Image (cartoon, one colour):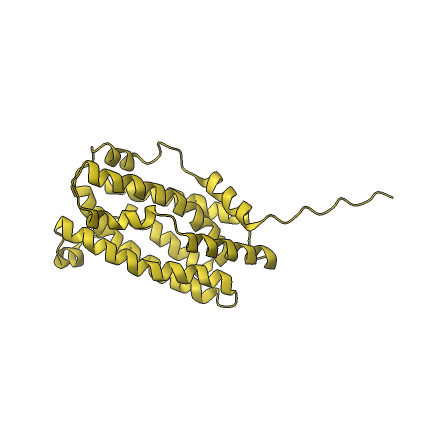
Length: 226
């Protein structure tokens, strides 16, 4: 009698997240806007557009993360990941206010600004994920995107000091995301481990969502420079 093959071992959470980051990493030259900023070739006005757009991105993402926290209420490790993200948006908004002051953006300018569709595609898709995608799959997709976003922010933060003469306080928003977050990494691992154990995690499906997030991320930066 032929002995059935042993079942394949379940992947570990760190292997799933590492694979997503590697598979979904954008090409090195994909982000032309960040490359222009790094070289000091982008206009200073681009940072004003960035700040105005980010106010709306942050507001939308905070709602999305709160909704995902609620949806994952029965899965505490997953809910804890989104709870940290939602809380972190308040810190991001504080850092963004410092950039507003350095750029001379008045509250009336914020209120009257008309956002660019290409810049708001990312938070719109994040809201779609919050409404109907398995939360742990969103954890995987977001973790891959955060790796790219963090690298972009590190590059922009350096360039703002070297080429645009902006003070450290104005660069704080970018510094926030450029710095590693061990607590967020820990919660991502715990969430994905829980998802694998309960059968909720679907890494291939998460990669599909992650590819779109990365594409909308690039669309955001491209739209800033249009």
